[in-house]
Image (cartoon, rainbow, N blue to C red; front, side, top):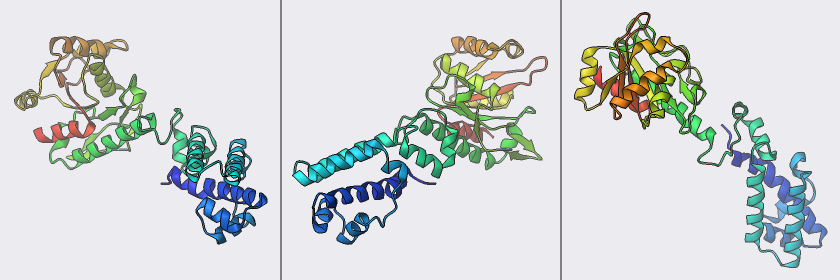
Amino acid sequence: MKFVEEVVVEEFLPTFRSMLAEDLRERGLTQQEVAEALGISQSAVSKYAQGAVDRNADLATDERVQDLVERVAEGFDSGSMSSVQALVEAEVLIRRLEAPGDRLATLHEEAMPALADYEADFRIHDPESELRAREHARSSVKRGLRVLEHASGFATLIPNVGSNLVECTPDATDVEDVVGVPGRIFDVMGRTEVPAEPEFGVSEHVASVLLAARDEGADAAAALNVAYDEGLVQQLEDLGYVTVEFDAAYERGEDGGIREAVAEALAREPDATVLYQTGGFGVEPNVYILAASAVDAAEIARDVV
């Protein structure tokens, strides 16, 4: 794991400081004056000015970096720019260079290839970025899966078609915005088996139930399906969860059939957090637990085992 700040320290700062030290020395400032202006040692100034520090060629040839170096050097030389103002100007440029596709963002992707998997336009420092939302959802599902793996008896709740634990991003619109388990969760000789790491876009069915519920106003961001049992539904009701049945026949219809069935069910019980269908021709009965997070959904299932 490499932080973008490390890229700034390793690539931007040596390049910027060496260019600035060289410019200031050419303007006639002494080594001590340059050291005081930059807040570094005289020996560091000597190394910068003598070219003993490697510069990043892409950053050194960037017109914005060159312009900033010239403006700061002119400001220091004339006394018209304070060190605080210079710092602010440099920070502003750094944030611009961290923007998607820009110099520092590209260097960061080279150091962290996994970032290149995200095609969305995001800023690494943006707390509302899609990247952060997706990784938060993925992490939540991983933690929820650990709860299920360690829940004694959960395997008995897994239907023949398998279970899945999913969570969506805050602005989810389709299954590509929902992270789940590829291949689903299975009961292997009484043990809960999770075949692969969570991925986005791999749970068509459980994701569709979750998205349909959200479309009807549900606050849930996660869902877990387990095998239907009348006693299980009663347990959930006894724990205070509102349950509602939807028509399994819709599952054999065209795309959107599940959404229609869920919509009709929630129209009857708007506060429902447990949806279930008792099966039909070619359709295995299932219970769908809706929750604020994958961890919450997993803990609900654990509590009724």
